[in-house]
Image 1 (cartoon, each protein chain N blue to C red):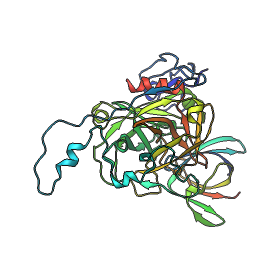
Image 2: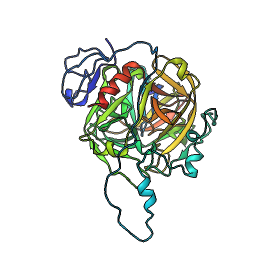
Image 3: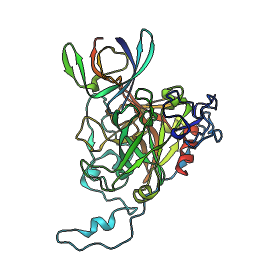
Image 4: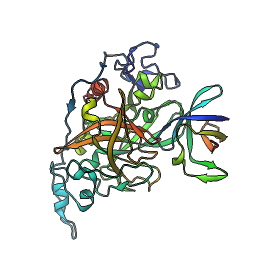
Length: 324
Length: 71
C-alpha cells in the first residue's frame, strides 16, 4: 500500500489512536485522505528523476495608513512585506545571505546557532512557533512554516503523536514569534493532515504533516515558502538552511543554522546542522539566486540530524494542502 | 524498564521510539523530565539513538518523568 496516502484529523474517531486515515483500515498509504472523509487519489511515488518546484510568496502587507507617533520610524513599516528583503547586519552574518560556496561550520557537536532577531521579514516570518495540545492533555512545541495561505507544514509527529494519544487537539500557530512578541498574532488550527505511512505505520520515512488553518488571513499576510522535490544530484552536498524554535533557548525565540547535506536516501536528507528539540517540523531550505525552496521537513536528531525529504509524493501532497 | 533508543523526534519535549524486551514503544518525555547519567543530571539533548536507557519514573498519563542513560 502506498504510504503517502493522506491521513486527516477529521476522518477519525478522536479516541482511535490506530490511525487508518479513512476509518476502515484500507487505503493506499500515498493516497490523500482529508479530515472530512475519503481517500481522494494517489499522491504518486517513485524516484525523483526531475526537479519539481513550487514558488514562494512574500505576502501582501495590509493597505492602510500609518499613525504619526513621535519616535516611530515609518520606513520599517513601509518596507515590511515588500519583496525586497531588508538586510540587517544580523542577516548578513547568516549563511543564507552570502554567496554560494560559503561553507559554514557543520560539526554537529559545536553549537553555532544564531538567533533571528528580525522575525518580521522574509523568510523568518514564514516560520512559526507551534504550541500543541495533545489528546492526553500534554502540551508540546514544534516548528511549522507556511506553504500556502492556510497551510502550515510541520513534522508528522507534531500533528499526530502516538506517544500522546494520536491527533493533536489543537495547535496554535505563531508566525515570526520573537520571545513574548507575536508580530502577526496567531491562529488556532484544529484541522490536520498527514499520511497513512505515519499515522498507521509510524514509519519515520513518512514523518510529515500539515495544519490547515480556518482562513487565509495570516498566510496571505506573511506569505509562504516555496518547496521543491530535488533529484539526488541536486541535493548531494547542497548548502541548506534551517530555522526553528528550539526548546533549549529562551521561549519563543527563533534560531538559525546552516550546513551541507551529508547524505541523501530515497526518503531522507541528512546533515550536521545543529538542531534541538522544538525544531521538529522546521523547514530545511535551499536559497539560490534569490529564491527559497524547502527541500525537507526537519524531524529527527541524533547527529547526523535529518529531514523527511520532499520527494514527488510529498510534493504532490503539499500542493494539495497548499490549495486547500 | 530498560530499553534502547531507536529514534529521537525533535519536538519539545522530545518524543522517543524505544525498543524494549516486549517490542517497540512510543514515548514522550515530560516537559521537565530529568535525564541522568552516572547519577548526574544531563541535558536531554545528549540522548542519542543506540543508547540504552532505563525509565525510572512515569506520569499518570505515561510521559517519562525520569530517565537514566546506562549505556
